[in-house]
Length: 226
Length: 226
DNA sequence: CGGGGGTGTAAAAAGGGTGTAAATGGCGTT
DNA sequence: AACGCCATTTACACCCTTTTTACACCCCCG
Image 1 (cartoon, each protein chain N blue to C red):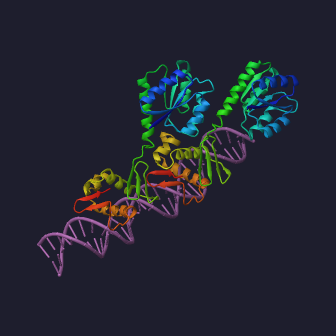
Image 2: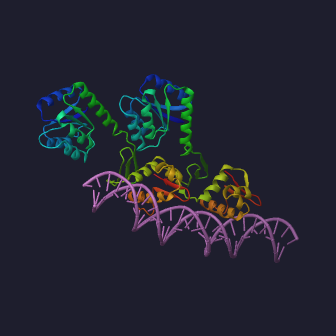
């Protein structure tokens, strides 16, 4: 669920924006002053902050500087024409985008989506967790654990595991795996696979000599059976 | 309850200002000399200091320097026209605002309110405190301590730590970290990272050669594991 | 029974990535 | 003008990963 913090003092705009965001399935938090806004940003840790310029209790630039001193949360600035000049200073201070009042619901949502998409891309937030046995794999976070203990995988090992998991249940031929992990030039070097499959088995299987998950398909390739 | 320390030698002005502030619900402390003022500021820890220039026992600039050496308390300067020049020097020394005598009650209270509001924003009170091991990081306040001892981090070191902490648990690629800390132009200079990661490890880890928190993901980037 | 393709392990060899120390240079302060 | 701090650059030793090489094994088939 997306969460947005709206820092705005005008009741009408708050209601208007909250409505629009909630229709999009966003969790909306509100703050009426800059001080409250900073406070809320720290405690709620929203995925996006919408900041109205021209709040009575201080400067938007100062807000941005304070926020940016400890957080990279994307910030969308709302500005009236009268605060045109401040808008630039706020963007310089680290804000990510702006909207000039009056704005349409469509444009508002489009920009919100764009910022949320970007923030989701980078840190890869929606982490798809894969579990099998006592092993837990977070593909996005590049983290693997077995029985609670974090397991270290090398780059190649992780890449191979990723391909296998993304095609779990189906046989992947030697050629398919080699092309996906090592690239087309090594699509014939199937001994790479034997070595790295062995690594994965030793790190993830309970009994590497009798693999339960990482199965061999003789003459064809390998299959990851969850 | 707001508390204000008034450093002023003229009895009339003291009574006048005290009256105005008390009507606003402020707790007012008074000092007649700069020496007493520093003393009182240290013991009372008011939320605001009002400082009259032209006190007989010293220079306002010196007062500010002494005060600022240990405190960020906002300071509102009261100045007569004759001390116009000193006013600038005091502001440079860290004072926050000024009032030129004679002033109206309304203006006085407006500026006091503005400063108090700002000082309230300052602690950004729900400061996101991050703890790991015996290390404690206040991202908003830019302060770091280890085993109770404050640790000094340079600007770059702190910025890097901020990004890592805000994404703790997940791998941040070299490129992501470089873009976030040094900007897009240096997104290829991954040796910057090695150097500054080493700095952070030496300052924060118990055993820098076997880092417990700031982990390397070879060929990929770094991960902060809380 | 013996060979050969396919497979699993175990090690060296090569190479790039990484950690560390120290020199350089810019900048603000004294 | 001298100094200290810090960002940047440079240099180098080392470790880990990858790649290479080597060999034992199993099973089917000749």
